[in-house]
Length: 106
Image (cartoon, rainbow, N blue to C red; front, side, top):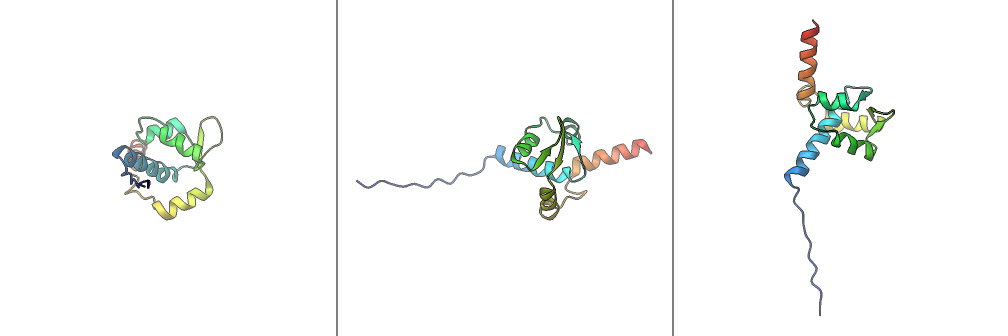
């Protein structure tokens, strides 16, 4: 008897797409910091948790130098600049916060 081979193509779920968007946003916004505390960065991006940041640390995209200080790996920084092209338009949450802080300080 001949076995039937089936190929399954998984369609990304909305949760996976949302996670990918969060990870891209994290990497784009990390460009603006040399080194930043994890919780402060998550708060600046209005993230509910630090799971995306921790995932990027585990993958080696973000380097965790001290207890809670993170920065983009230098090679990843170059790739992010070339491929994700961070700008004021696509780093919305963070740039709005910079504008508010700048307005308050002045």
